[in-house]
Image 1 (cartoon, rainbow, N blue to C red):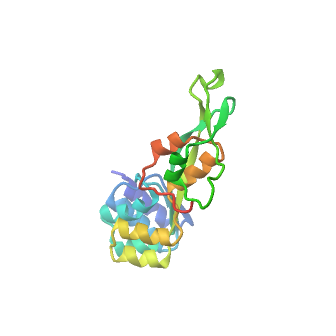
Image 2 (cartoon, rainbow, N blue to C red):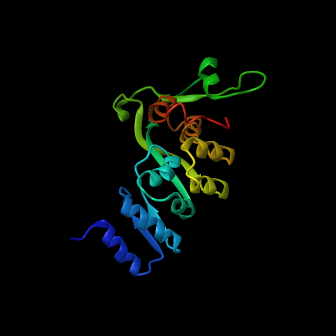
Image 3 (spheres, rainbow, N blue to C red):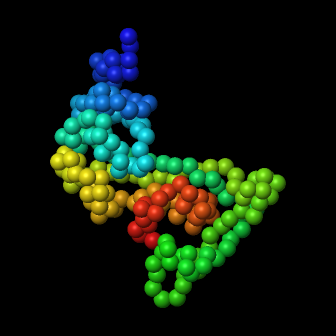
Length: 201
């Protein structure tokens, strides 16, 4: 029978420049993808993980040796969809100082910050939302993290080093879109976790 891994090997024999893998979900596919990346092919693939950093450790968990994972990854992007504030009934409001202190630090007087929410109208069916947009996080592999992955470091160690290198979690991108009036704080809290801290605000 023909399975996904066999088809992928057949593609490699054609010497493509770019390989797109719909989803990596088993050890054989993951190993072939890693080996293809190591032999000069640009491999684009999807995986089901909670965030970008977990994609790295997930490959190790399903059976790819850490020394193969480390040099084969260039970067990982993760995304989630949030509802957009309805443009027809969007209105600004000033969040309370208590709410702001959960997400921002500041010196001196309280900054003038406005969030937005939809009041509900016929255009949005009374929900205050219309349409969706993505919030993202992008993890770029560097040599320091590459060496950590090669020695099978924990996700917590990798995350700490990624943050030192400038990695910003998905909640950070979400908050930028809240400040631009594209979505609501409630949506960001719904689709992200408190652990995805807002370093930088």
